[in-house]
Amino acid sequence: MRTKKQLFDELTGGTLPSRTLFRPILMHFAARFGGTTYGKFASDYKTLVDCNIRSMEYFDTDMAGLISDPYRETSAFGAKVTFPAEDVPRCENILVKTRQEVQQLKNPNVYKSPRTLDRIKGAELFQKELKGTVPVIGWIEGPLAEACDLAGISEFLMKIMVEPDFSNELMDKCVVTAKEFALAQINAGCDIIGIGDAICSQIDPATYDLHVRDRHREIISFIQEKGGRVKLHICGDITHLLPSIAGLNIDILDLDHAVDMHHARDVAGPGPILCGNINPVLIQDLSPEEIETKVYKMVSSMKGQKYILSAGCEITVSTNPENLLAMSRAR
Image 1 (cartoon, one colour):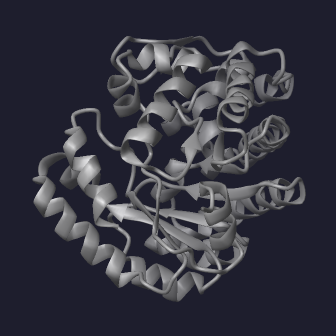
Image 2 (cartoon, rainbow, N blue to C red):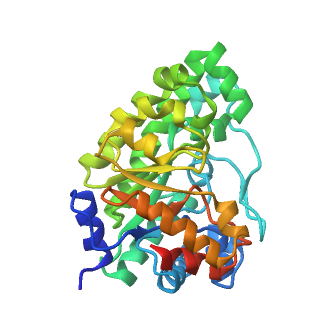
């Protein structure tokens, strides 16, 4: 019997496996299912790994992941991050407001910062527990998302338009740390590196092409050269960015529910694995029977293609576990 890692390797190699792979994004849901708080899940790698393995085994998902929140690198750069028990971790301060502050900002050592080291240790623990039988997804922030975390969302998006030296220098530093953090996770045992750059859905194609696309390409090429696969996750509607993203040689492209899967396939071509894209609100609110019908229809429509079943974004903490079981059964 083939392992989950072998099934994933078949899919990335272009051979469709015997069943549809299933990998929902589980964070607060996994913490609650594992009997702990989101704060503990995000701040302690042992808790995160335990909750992920419990969820993987119960819902028969095909990958394990280290995603928890967007502030690992931000904390490493020097920001203060707090951990509410039942809410997303919070970044309490903006680190850079001027170009001089950007120039003075030091790239962190990802092995010495507690939050980046915590994720690296999580990758090592996954390998110890799973013994290479399950694909492990590491995670980094994309350059636009990380720059917004460091400078403030509204502030940074304005800087892109009126102060390109500030924005370019900051994103370049974000690329350096993204690559170092990705490599550390690959060396610790991650098979896939997820790149989260949700804010990209809020910019137009010209801005993406000018400021972000080549930085994405640099990070993606680096990860692949180091032996990892790449999963690009941009929340929201990225239909307008698909022609630009199609040229990035991504291994896995996450698609939120606002994006038409078949249009995305037409634009991206047969190469990337498409992952998604059922609305997580429907997974939360529908009955198990309704979910099975919806998932079966989605999986059937993607038959013969490189595809991983998932919600468009994170499974909500309020989702009934029976609904996620229904999703798993229906593939």
